[in-house]
Length: 371
Ligand code: SF4
Image (cartoon, rainbow, N blue to C red; front, side):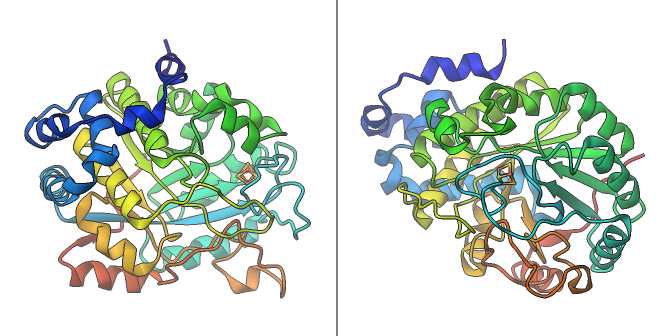
């Protein structure tokens, strides 16, 4: 039994009618009940729940305070490499894009790490494109060993690995895994990932579970909003997160709903996702899974990120760059700054910390020490 079996139960659904059916009673129950069912989760994502967003926001806020207090964990992404064998149509690092490619050397990495660490951040998220030739697991492991000198918690957002490979990186000091399915609909997944190892839907879908089995402490799943109907994708991702929570009670499960942003390449989304849609998705996820950590990325504007804080957000990136070597201007030459995608909230770590304190939140720079 894997999450794919759950997915198969919904694969042939008529999603339009599912989300359009009357669901007022189910929304009422979701707002009152301590245990929220899958049917109630679906109802909270439906169009009929739109007039109830204020009530949902109150409930989501109350649950967030109960399970997380007024704390926001901060981290920043660090890109090791943008070499990639995949052709994800929505990504600036797509192998077909004629961009400058770069792989951080040990010296580059030391510079990046020491600069980021000086901001006070002790949680780092390490990213690479998918090239087993240019950035093999052995290279990533060497990088983790360097990063351990600077950070107490190291998460990876890299290509899907086998369980043994995840275990190898856990041994090197990795404690967190972020791996987005991007889109759960298998047919759309095939269109978005036409060529390259990432086109293996099942290998990617089962990666969070392999990571959890290998001993990873924090596992984050996600969907890229803009590739499919956001209601359906949020529902399928919520079920995936619940599956992982139920199967691995010791693992901290998190989720993220990044929205497609401009990037090198020509793909244009036909699935518009509004701010109100993102709010509804966050509220439904928080009420359905009160212990789920929820991340909002710097893809979103500063104003929007601040406004949705009380609704259920528990993690934020700060001082972000989506370029390889982007944290140190010295590490990249003129004209070589190629972002994976554009970010909106450009504030540095100090700026984000100040904003959080002004809003009555405690910015958490370190809450874990790997041994
Ligand atoms: S999303 Fe990741 S795997 Fe796909 S092209 Fe971009 S870097 Fe490569």
